[in-house]
Amino acid sequence: MTASVVKAQEVRSGRAIVPRLRPTAAWALAPAAAVLFAFWLLPLAHLIVLGGQSRDGSDSGYWQVLSSAQYLGSLAQTCILALVVTLAALLVGGISGVFLARQRFFGRSALVALLTFPLAFPGVVVGFLVILLAGRQGLFATLGLELAGERWIFAYSLMGLFIGYLYFSIPRVILTVMAACESLDRSLEEAAHSLGAGHWRVVCDVIVPGLAPALVSCGAICFATSMGAFGTAFTLGTRLNVTPVAIYNVFTNYANFAVAAALSVVLGAVTWAVLLLARRLVKQSGTVL
Image (cartoon, rainbow, N blue to C red; front, side, top):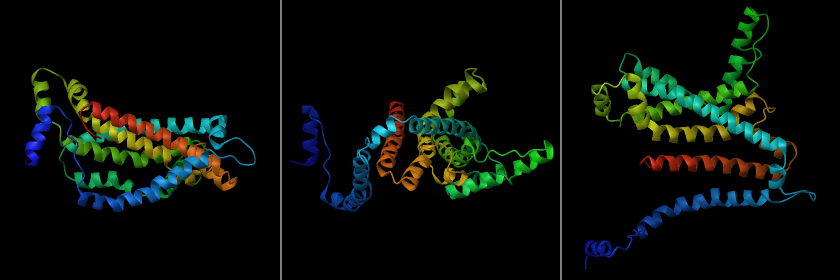
């Protein structure tokens, strides 16, 4: 009896067909599984256990984090900052991505390369660029000194961190939206126009729903990146009350590894929950993230 006949009988009998992993495929996945276990699952398990430990008879790391207004405020501020960065990046990058995908003009390729160039910069370089823009000796400081007699400095605040995060979030949105625009059915827009729909109605009822899966998935990536970005925040100043900097300060200045591990686990759990929510939203729209 051939395999196709067996599958047909299973379908007729109503039994679920579960594909089996071939031995060759299992051997091919073995190196990736070993790396995943050694460099991800094992350290993660140790991190979770370490967060439950206590030092010098104090409470566990998780309880210290969840009962501290400072740590909870840092986490809330990090989430709000990541959310604002995500929304701003989706707005600016979404509009720019649709325009660049639909329009053809001289210098378009150079403009796309220029807009996506920040992806090549690490977080430390991005932070340095923000300092050059809005630091004590930056362009805004010089301009403010000439116009108002005082230096305009905001590089070392949440505004400077927002600009830095936005700097490397917009290119991700632009590239994702440009790729998603290639799969949109232009006939739907033409049909909407033929039925009397205006430009903004077509945008709201056709283009935005068509790009929704890409926007949700890219927004989740921007949120996760902003939640865990450290290089930019560290360059702009260790006094910023965001969770990655708090983790660094806890285990570097105070050697409190339990609290640092607990903060890491909580930060990862919040980020993972947002990614899971985005994945389910995309699946509900019929696209697999």
